[in-house]
Length: 338
Image (cartoon, rainbow, N blue to C red; front, top):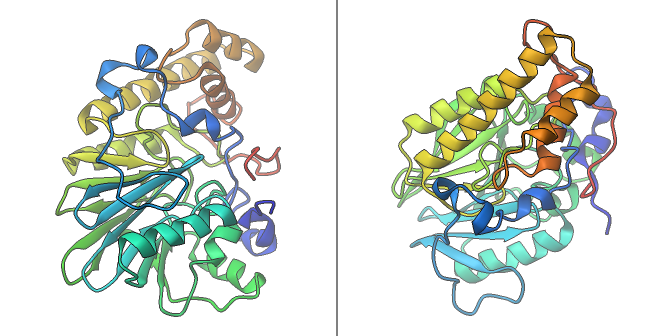
């Protein structure tokens, strides 16, 4: 089944909220789905396994147990995480296709001993992490959905357009907590655009594990091709995350690594890109030449050259002489995974 972008389903309702709301990245997610070869990866950002695969897992992607009662699995371009909070399961993101969702439901049922999915957190609404078909499998009156306040109404409109009953929906702004009987999950909705304009990251305080979606992708650079992506916003998000002093990070792709080192290498990439783009904007350098400059100064092992170039051009075309980024036009080619 072809993956349907939620953006296509709710285009009319999104006009009042901004044209770039549900855009998926231009770049194909396989560029970020795998960590770079060890020989090309900075030592500080080398991914390492979180834990051993769970026993008797269904055929397909491996299920890893990050800690007792906390599991994850990685599909192409996304990582799903779920945790037992005591009186139910919280699931973070649902997969990029109906096939992913079906496998994910089996994994959750097996590892959580058929405990119900009581809470569902959507880190953002790009198709590779939360496709329309995959998301539908997890919507029910018994499952409360947590989504950024900036897109909560659009999300509910999309569900109606897909002829489904709108589940209990919480619009997340600032920081809030999902409290279970045994553990809690802390959610932070960013106030400014970063990877998208509706990013949420989650934290399991008892094991100090952050689930960052596409804000921070261990072992590789973040995708900044969304029309609302903002370098300054991602840098601010890294500052917030750094203050949490987390011991582990799970992004939509990549492995695990030392969080402090991962934040440092990502921050360095963003600052390099911001400096390069601003300097060339001051000189009114043509975009094609900027792409060439990027290719001549690649970040081997951390950011694939093609991704580095796409990030640079996408941002450069929206950057003003003062270095500020304006929201771009969402009407552009779809990603390969849409």
